[in-house]
Image (cartoon, rainbow, N blue to C red; front, side, top):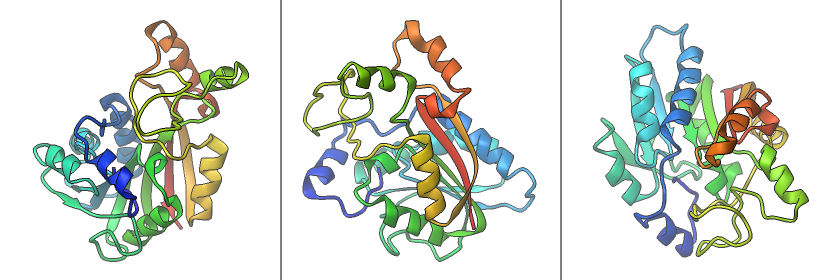
Length: 242
């Protein structure tokens, strides 16, 4: 995942090949469809950046839905870029710091930002840099886990650490799940809307998406919760640079 000058512990964590770097094909497909709809009125080929591209799954999933557009994967992690390059025509290194993305101002028509913001030490700087490289009116497609997912509300009432939250990069403590994935920040639907708007974007749409880690007997309920994004497992947000 692309980060902002991470401390050595985080650097080592994200360069570990065992750490998951994909957000899941169904979720990536849903996000790609949202972007294809947003770009539908545009006939000119555009530049789309998949920032925090991980293993390239999100960009590779989006490519067939975005014919004619150039998609470039960007990540801080060299391990992630090694895994992404077989899937993408172009994958390069970049950081979400001031001027850390190797693109001129207002160069991009859209940015895919899939399951990245929850990993960042400085999300404010990240959105500033994304806003810099987006043209006025350019699209931001952001996805992130929902702190207030329907099951997390129940877990908190029971005194259990919410799913997606982590207290250590070494092991799981006090919550369901088996994988340590390095989440540093979590958002509710309301917090995400306010945060993105404060960074200079107009929120166009917010949708919910299911989470593949929900136990099979509860997956139907998880899909139903998507109808109300504040309760959904995953938040999918479409915003435009103002």
